[in-house]
Length: 161
Image (cartoon, rainbow, N blue to C red; front, side):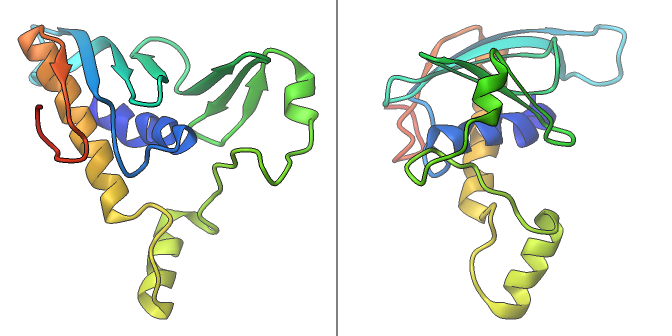
């Protein structure tokens, strides 16, 4: 969960405009491998509800990436390499308007962006706050899997309401 979360959930939060907050309700189920030396959940599925009405649904099966679904179709971004696929080729070819959500990129990768911020000042593309929010969400999903309970969360206070 924390591995995929660091790479996939982070992108979903960015695209949802919730990089600096988090969901208000989480539920998850998972399966551990009893023969493994690790006690992590290797198979899982989860659902997070955000205050803005968006649901983030995830699972360990399938391609590794994030799929954004809307009224006009869907767009999938592969985590490794950033390849795009969509329900219709026109979604990929349509030019972006200034008012469209744009995820952005860290030029040269996150490591280069971080070093540039040290040298020149500024906030990295993926700031400590963003990392904190993603890590918290991953751990909350692990807690939901361990307890089997739906969790309520106040992302502003970083605690259960």
